[in-house]
Image (cartoon, rainbow, N blue to C red; front, side, top):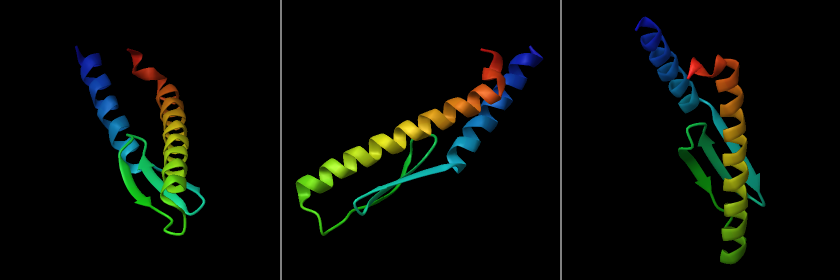
Length: 85
């Protein structure tokens, strides 16, 4: 029973650490920042680009940032022993 409480505490600490770590990606003046919980923290657009270019770069930038965040989150979960689940 105490192991479950320990695992729950570890999980909460892990989630808290994910909120604090930020990934930022930039493409052609468009910048995306998100934390490892995948919460979007900031988006900056490039007004010099046409709308269709902004949309494409924004999508690409967001996908790259999310992939990097997922990899980092997986590395951290693995380093913590996977929580024993």
